[in-house]
Length: 439
Ligand code: HEC
Ligand code: HEC
Ligand code: HEC
Image (cartoon, rainbow, N blue to C red; front, side, top):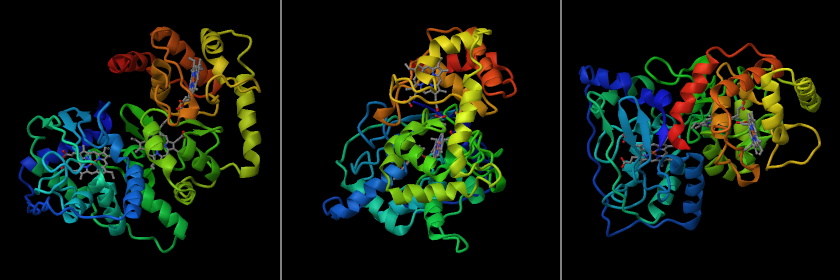
């Protein structure tokens, strides 16, 4: 189950209220079902290209339930007004998209309207997918229609009144959907435009990495990629507000997207792990470089440490933090030394388990919210972005709230020299409760 309370509350909230008020009215015709006895044929090359695009768009991440068959839907997305279930996007005629023509599929991706003419909830990221080119939509369609058709009767999306009235979404779309394929910015390089196409379109990176306005739509302008919330995790800013003490360079970004780990940062955990595992890690070098080029253009020049100086800057940050652990004068330092150092020291000793991320270089320690650190300590990292990373153990049953607060206060204030996190104890208690059933 996905908890998208804060991120995706948007999709329905005010929208439905406005719709019910009847301020806007619009309807769309049904698109004729396909003749199932005459299935279209697609080339292997086109299907393979479509699969890569489906990976880039994380289709299977959302359209597969826990232990379910890929793309048969049924994943529950919980929002404050009920539960939205993802749909079966295999070509089964009865329960999937087997009767969808290309035009019907294209309309869903560009406008968020299903074959029968119903509005889809923006929990389906069509505001981003709309930017996909016709040629890529054709390849995606070819891939989806070439999957094995699987019958899957998923639970029905069940939202309370008035959010169950899909037509309300038309009002929200009017304000926040700009339908149409990505148009290149001629002032930018071809590589930058390729990156923009992938990030703003299928990658839908800003769905998690951008804060939302009161209508739960993504903010624009200087707030773009300025950090957001996903399934109770913080998705850090990727623009000039990046919390990383070093900021990013191109090579680090490419490495992080390819392997889920960058030595000057940390790992892709939480909701970012499947984005790497099922999407980014399979993309071509050229495309990952293009994404990095695009992202770096939002980072601002003053935070950047030149490539030649980064190794030394990272070593200095590590030294400053790690060298003050001894003598173990506080409870937090003692816990860190005993419970964490074996796997997180930064000396040349052996790597016990996959990778050995530096806590001093980790963005999560420099965020204004402690939430990611709390998630990681309570629940560990059970589903790594790639198998090579190893697992981080959960400390839920080894430490009580007071011990986690002592550890985190130490890491934040003495280790990273950042101002104390407010209301830390309450957050630890709350997240422990919220994630109880996951473990
Ligand atoms: C963040 C989660 C998420 C991702 C990623 C996602 N979808 Fe969906 N999708 C949904 C949800 C939720 C619905 C159902 C919305 C509703 O019921 O209104 C949906 C509905 C659809 C529908 C309409 C199906 C129907 O029967 O009405 C299609 C088609 C679709 N998605 C295709 C895709 C494709 C192709 C991708 C990858 C490029 C993708 N989705 C990625 C969440 C997602
Ligand atoms: C489903 C939500 C979601 C989507 C979609 C998503 N991210 Fe993330 N991202 C996160 C979260 C959460 C983290 C924090 C992970 C952690 O701390 O381990 C993160 C971390 C990152 C980081 C590391 C930032 C840092 O300072 O440590 C980078 C880089 C990144 N994402 C890039 C991307 C790119 C590029 C895309 C689109 C292709 C993307 N993300 C799409 C949720 C998401
Ligand atoms: C048995 C080894 C081990 C121990 C003990 C351990 N960790 Fe980890 N930790 C890991 C590994 C391996 C990863 C990377 C896992 C992955 O991505 O799959 C990791 C990742 C992390 C991250 C980075 C997460 C991110 O999103 O970038 C943080 C922060 C962290 N650990 C904190 C701690 C703290 C605090 C403790 C002590 C309470 C601790 N770890 C104890 C092995 C360990």
